[in-house]
Image 1: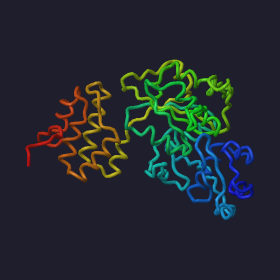
Image 2: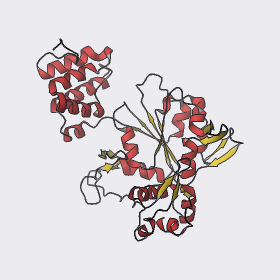
Image 3: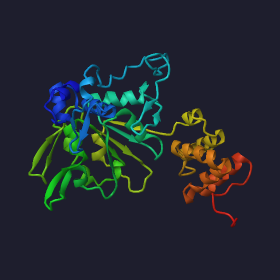
Length: 354
């Protein structure tokens, strides 16, 4: 990678697709390597649609080492079916693009991050479903550093996926590719977050990219045909309890693997989150599964709970836990929290003037 950039004419720019073609590697791997070079100052990223890269004064020195991320080692399987790291212990935490750590969980006797990576290599689309805050997006970001994310909602249009004409600084118009086309051209992973909130008519524009042809036609741009480069992959997230979320048969049939994602309360305990708060969350989760309540704190809420407790104290954090519960469940949540603490708890609110 660095050698190609360093030996090119001064100022020459290359897209991920071009570099992948020259090197014979997948677009995803090449994109990751380019970003590693940029982080080190050994390459410069120019533009974003598509991403272009060129050499810097430090690129020549980078030719002495390999920057392509090594493949994830296949973990050994412990007796009883549990997954272990290459060293026989727990898998190491994975650093997400935002710098936060993701702690892998078990999926099909593998660390979930590796399971998703293997499915991508086999071009098997995955749908992750579960309540907000359970770690669906965190898992996907940990598995795919080259990820492009589309935040789906009822207003998402075909243009938001494929692209549309935008006025330039000279008053004219130019076609700007959308995230789907960018992911296809650069061989990157594409996350449709809250995919089931997107109109089925809009999602239909995506389906040709997911079948055997891996092609779409951009009718708005002279009928241009876009073919998915090696590494292009689609993954989606679905929150069944969100109002307006509909998993249609057409959408479900495109995702051969569908994985339920719930909160890992054992991880919450390992992260030193207040044990009473974790116990309350487990109780509410059990009640939710039984249909007795519609809401339970997920890992996201528990992490926020501990941050609030560290700043304002545990009493304020428990009061806030009651306050963030949906109105229809608040009485039940208040009762459970009050019983767990042995004292009355009400939603966090302003008091008298000091």
